[in-house]
Amino acid sequence: MKKIIGLILLAGLTFSNSAIAKKDKKGNAKAKVALDYLNSSFSTYDKLQKTIWANPELGFLETNSSGLLKQHLREYGFTIEEGVAGMPTAFVATYGSGKPVIGLLAEFDALPGLSQDTVPFRKPLKENGVGHGCGHNTFGVASSAAAVSLSKWLVANKQSGTIKVYGSPAEEGGAGKVYLVREELFNGVDVVLDWHPSSENAVSTNGGTAMVMVDYKFYGRPAHAAGNPWKGRSALDAVEALDYMVNLLREHVPTSSRIHYVIPEGGIAPNVVPEYARVSYYIRSPKRDILNTLTEWIDSAAVGAAKGTQTRVEKELIAGTYERLHNKTLSKVIQKNLETVGGVIYDERERKFAEQLIRATGNPDSIINFAAKVQPLAEFPEEGSGGSSDVGDVSWVVPLASFGAATFIPGSPGHSWQNVAADGTTIGTKGLLNASRVFALTAIDLLTDSKLLQAVKDEFKQSTSPDFKYIPLLGDRKPALDYRITKNE
View 1 (cartoon, rainbow, N blue to C red):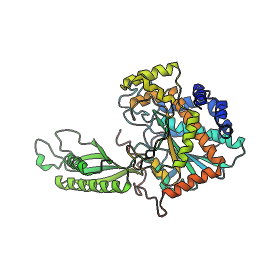
View 2 (cartoon, rainbow, N blue to C red; view 1 turned 45 degrees about the vertical axis):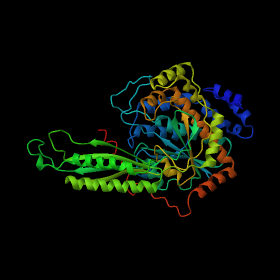
View 3 (tube, rainbow, N blue to C red; view 1 turned 180 degrees about the horizontal axis):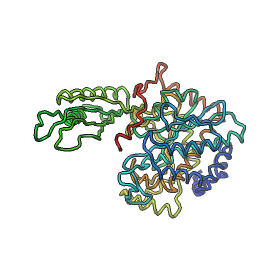
View 4 (cartoon, rainbow, N blue to C red; view 1 turned 90 degrees about the vertical axis):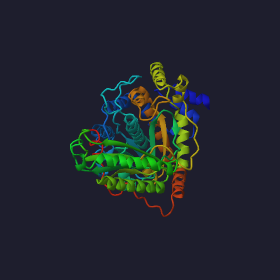
């Protein structure tokens, strides 16, 4: 078994379909049409992901990135529904007809402050500029590549079934998928497949945390800070009073919860009592009921801060996401296919680059081999931890499973310049094509095995209570289309 997987890995860009057939004569050989397409399309998707990488766009502003993916899918016969759920850059691309319906998630937004060249040392292309520190330049491209490969497979095999690509903007704080769920755009979908750029190849088993992003805006009264400060009421004082109270309450919240904030606007000149100030909070917990309690507590502190400083406060709920509900049955299928595809094999140039980048992170050179390996399926913890994603909302309305592919260098921290540097190279392209292959193999399993599909759906029904009703944490607010504009003018 290990020798066969090794043959697959050593195939590099060409990726041996004959090795796959030997590994599973009954199953994966049937995916040949889809895999042949992906194996012959390296240059196409290398160019596409690098074009998006070179023109990074913040959440809800991804006009070019979204447009490139739509154009590519349209060229291969997908019908495109644009501007869905009130988001100009969101789309649903559809190919095929009938059941089952398989959804693929596609992200493409970048992060502020992470501009970086494709070199193994810190070198912003633009000071404080935008960069793909979470790898979404490869995310949407991999999903689109997989969808195209599946469209060719459907035709070649005269197979009924529908493939939908969900162009999902503003994952980084804007919660674009929540609006897609709220507008019931996943109704009628049987299964959704998700992946994410990573520094390793592994199925995701951590449920993460539920999260709300809240801005507290304080309004005071300006005055000369030296001449007549008693006439002023400082909005910044109110922000600092709120932050102080929140820092005190940290002792009294569950250890699995997280609260973090920044002050994007705190005044302009020290000698002017600030008339306006804004603090932006992320509040997280593995459980939504605890999250709601924490949010109410911080809301009360904001009201108290305003009263104590004789200012006025307004709360704006920017985003809110559920914790993730994993489907173990589907995850096991993805694990099987991830092991079949294998990890990322560096050529000599890529390996040298990776070694330099690993040293820049302070890690030992030996971890470079992690990129070529597939991690075993981990346990599914009862309680999630760490970050949050709007993928969580999708997972509560349709069966979903996720995995990571090594488009980053092993040991690289999340949301880092190291990720930007690696993801914009052929290393990123190799990783994204591996993700596409896993998508293709998994979708074909579901399209051809009705018992497997039913088992996935049965587990989903058992995981959600009969009286569960999806209620978005962000309420009925419209998409915060300007949330990145106001913070990064």
